[in-house]
Image (cartoon, rainbow, N blue to C red):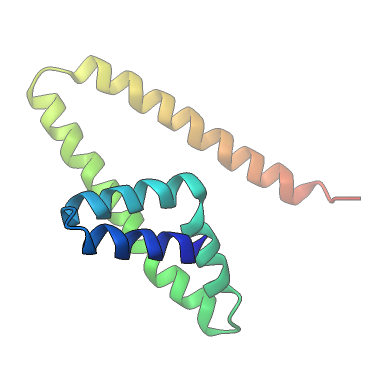
Length: 112
């Protein structure tokens, strides 16, 4: 799959397609084919260094996403969408609590 994507990128760039379009299509294909998850898994397989590299790459991404959420929330509150924002935060909180409970139950109950 990586070879197919690389060939498609090279052909698209040589045929004069705009770089922004090539990057967007590559990201969309990467997300839908889960190729980035496969690359992360391959990197994580390297002993000692692999998991560290994955943590260094993923933690800042979550920080940026969290910061973007705060900025969007601030803009939404300024524009008068506080009620809808509160509802969405409650749904998010319920989802996070469910994930935490599932994680705890999954580690308490041993697999047979």
